[in-house]
Length: 251
Image (cartoon, rainbow, N blue to C red; front, side, top):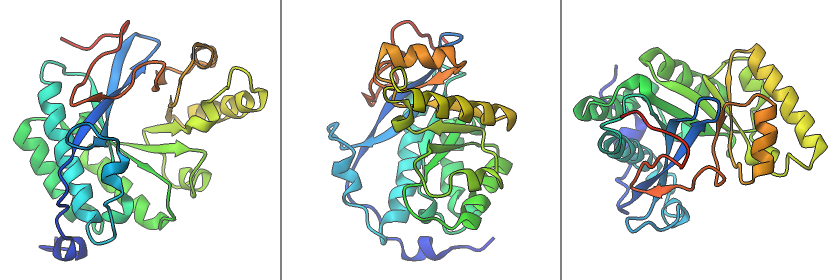
């Protein structure tokens, strides 16, 4: 392995301090918290935009690296009495230059704080044009190391179905626009129902995000969805991993 890559040599440090909020992902079938997603926030809980607006191509690598460290460090502290809930971390594929070189700090951090690799989920959003071959290399490397992988906002990105033909992640998060008003929108229900059937045949676990109403939750339950996330369940909690009412964490 090379001692450095383009990002390591040229990436300036991301100088703006930030922290994380954690939003639970729950299993509505068994009534427990499946994972907490780490979401970037300002140091006083300011919204993500206050931090994300400061990212540019020069500091993107450093920001991505710092996010991983911050998320793992906080999760190790917040989940120290919980040996089941996973940690979901968003990563930026275009900030990963060489997967095995760029993962070293993540591995070192997890080892330092004692957070198991098999409880880390790396999810990415197709919100920018990506080199599919590069993304596949990252995902395959992460799986070999022992991480779980997820595609976020499925149904709204660039690669979509094409990526699934080449790599099947552990989870696929259905975009919130597909879930919004699914209880009153027949077309959305049909699309989601067929997407769930496809994912089941591919042995990929679906996760429905952006669930905001009782009606939406009821439809997803009827469709056999287990994992859900959204304001109907719980909002993100700043520097806290709180199980929503009616759901449990391991003690």
